[in-house]
Image 1 (tube, rainbow, N blue to C red):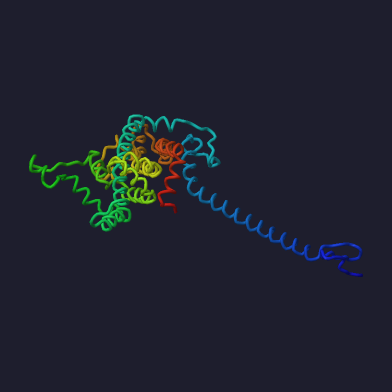
Image 2: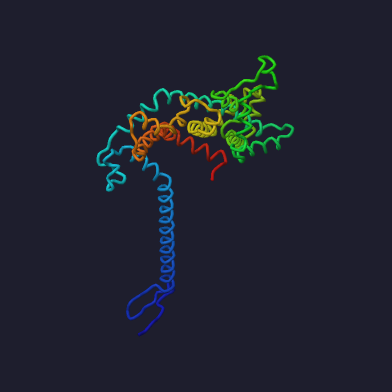
Length: 338
């Protein structure tokens, strides 16, 4: 066997066959490196998909189960071989749940109630957030601490003072001075409107924080240009700043609408009528159907409850699908990602 370098290109001749010496080694190293990176990428991608599928199953599994069971007939329920796909699907659950909930009327009132509170939330919380982001005033930091406390402290800790406040509602004794007694606002939606009007409603602290973060990210040159042109503070806020804060406003609007729509805590605390709050009426759906239609099997009653839950979820799902792009954009730009 005779080995010899034939030229300067590191051509190695072995038994009459030619190989690239150092170049062949470099190519071999590069190939191994690419192969290793490919394997790592495949493993990471596989792990990512496993995590996503696992999280999706945990979140969507119960929802899919509820939707599936809402179509079960009695025979499907008692058949142990039926798991997710009903063999004899029926819409009777939806018909009875629809009638029992008085769905059309109650849904209309619930939407009007939730949307009106949502509009007030967006206006008032955006004003407060804009004030914290752009103006300096005494005790500003301390007041912003109170905003953070609104986010951190559970509402259950102040439920008794809130209940007593609206059970004997009076403003600095003025109402009692005029009428001779305080006003009981329980069993009405007025407590929620009063709280929301003063930016103390459901999750208002979070909404203020979102607007504050968003306005701080907008350049001050926009306002300075408006002030140079003679615009006042309110004109600048409503016609310029609030328009530029559309992503944050959409985010807050969706959050507010969904949470207000699903709220049962304040509805029960202030004893708001279930003809206004649909989420409160669903709690008694099983008992109502059991009494009216003489259904005594609790497992069958759960099927009617599943149908009612689907009817309640449907408007929220539609709203999120329509505004998904704006919602994600607003969350990213507001600085609350993660």
